[in-house]
Amino acid sequence: MPDLSEYSQLARDMSVDAVALVPGPNFTRALGKAFMSHERPFLVVIPAKGSPAAIVPNLELGSWELVRFDGAVFDWFDQTGYEDAFTALADHMPLSSVAVEGQVMRVFVSKALTRAMPDLRIVDGEREISGLRIVKTDDDILALQAAIDVSERALEQVIARVRVGQTEKQVEQTLIQALFAEGAESLAFNPIVAAGDNSARPHGKARADYEIRSGDALLFDFGARNQGFAADITRTFFVNEVSDEGRAVYDTVLRANQKGFEVCRPGVTAHDIDDAVIGVLEASPYADRIRTKTGHGLGRDVHEAPYIMRGNDQVIRKGMVWTNEPGLYELDNFGVRIEDDVLVTEDGCRSLTSFPKNLRIIGH
Image (tube, rainbow, N blue to C red; front, side, top):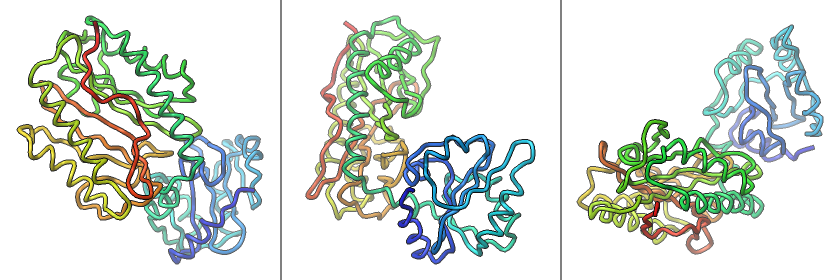
């Protein structure tokens, strides 16, 4: 049986009757098994006091047995629907308030809860629930490091094979194949491979009809996943040659990235880090190319707390992991982003990523 006591304590701390989890990173962390989020309601309710309960689609019961869940289980069939399962939950565990994951729980699941319990008060507990995993354990760090190592080995393979005339889509496929060949359990997210003007779109999609040209910036933003943890790495290269402008922009972004490491330590805020990093970009001739914050937390989710941005006074603590990814982007020209995964240590920080950041010209 998974130990769910910290969620019970959280419910007490938040002065609610229970915490409810649905499939996603927190669900996987709590139960030790991953389940799909689909059209079938699936949730675990952990009360402030007493035993937990779960609503489980019947077709998942075989997998659910592996969780060794020690609580009431209300299953339901596609043919009969899930309303009776929610009614049974309400009879078993009457609730007046419940904290849910505001960024994960879907509307139809929350409505099923309130149909079964019309007076139920639903509280957005996203920050508090996800906050339980904001400080990584030693095992979490090992899993993250393994995902990063796989990612970096794959990238080295791919850039050695880039040539003028290849399409972004061809390079993307090479990257995906290399990630799995190196041991990725899955992709952290759909990778970004963006050349030329596409590199100026922070979330650009690989094009099948654009052939890489000499002088193009070529941006990779990607990561492997290992044991549920995601790597998130960005490197920008230039193909065959680089202009003076390209060198200057790259140097500016690199200095901003380095500033992030200089200022990060326990006790500073996310605001402090972002202010220092973005300040480097603002002091450059390319301030009008700033389009993003410095970064975000990283772990089971690719984007999670702490969000490294001005106005966020969340205090940085030992064991947090965040992405240090300043960038400069000029539409219809090119963009540069450099992204490292950063672990906060007792007296500073260290990079979990080790892929070189010196400007590299590839494609020869």
